[in-house]
Length: 188
Image 1 (cartoon, rainbow, N blue to C red):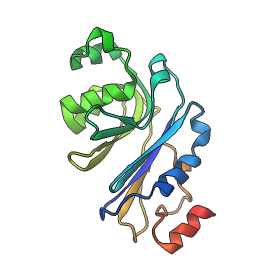
Image 2: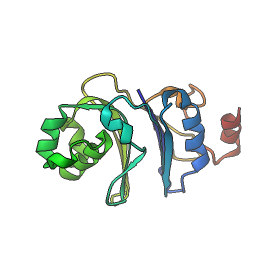
Image 3: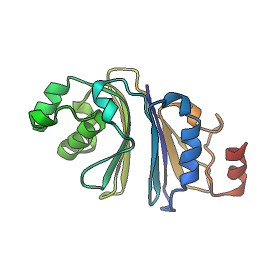
């Protein structure tokens, strides 16, 4: 499967693109079909893509919604796409869209609890810039895992990933990139 990573600075400090790039570099083996990052204000998301479905071939990630305000890093696959497309009112001509796009449409219709209406093995992190909210959800089909940890006390934030290898060490906190003690952890 693919992998995602990211973080949110709870003190509203700007996200450091170098931190999410460092996380993503540790997940390179999970994304032979591409990778990408997104940073805006206090949030950063990264995604390593492994295309496993016909729809995922057209995927770029993190996937940006048409409104430009919602961004999703998605790892996995959705099942029962036809039923989901019907429930979302997706026209037949658009039913081949990648899974992240369907999740964004579900989020638009059902809000942050949209994952309860999705079936499959997945995990996603979704940034809603309108509400300044980062949410992450896992599917009920198994296989998708999401891990979250607080970052160091200096940053006042937390970090997420679908593959703990994204983190620099298995300690009780994840190093940020803003304080000198943590910078040393990311470079080692």
